[in-house]
Image (cartoon, rainbow, N blue to C red; front, side, top):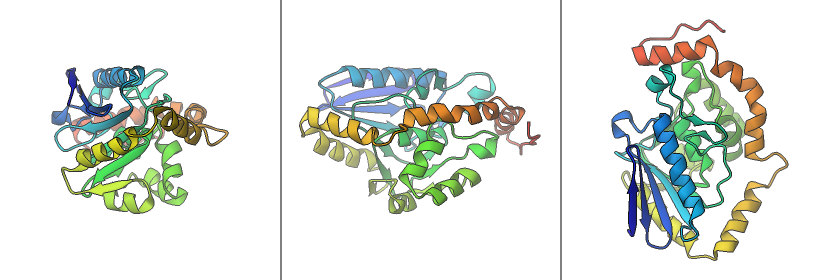
Length: 260
């Protein structure tokens, strides 16, 4: 390790070989993302992108959890983890030129799964769990879940997960092609670092070109698709049901849906 930077919610460590590890550090909240955490993540990604000597990034979470997604208690008070023009956590709606690997332990739920989907590759512990649970709370996954998940796994399986909010265990995610490598619990970051070193040893211009071509493979890029979906998503996110879902979570009770 060559250098480290810290904020209250995010730690950034620079490792040998031009690798940067970005760690969400709110284990007391299962690394759920509030506004301050989103801003800290955005700053960490901007630092990664601005540095020519950093060639691969790794996104992970402290305390054996990747991220439980949106901090619903903060959201119920009007605090949002979505940054205008950048998306959830400041990363889901931007083009990141640097290869980014998610190292997932424990839960990656809701926005946690969407942040993992915003990464180029995923390394996960065998006992990790993914899931787009938003429908349980009267909202939808607007930051990549509905756009990226059906591209990473079969469409019908993605629809089932999105419509039910059911969890996706890492071992099944690996069989479906969502996860690149499975590890024993506690070893996701170690494996992600090994993968990052294998990428970082190659020519930087070639690596950048490969990522750009692959990400622009279709006429409708992820960023454009996310923008197009907003006409359907925005009314849901500002609905009474969305507020009820957050309140019910904070109050530890079942929600009472009104369909408006």
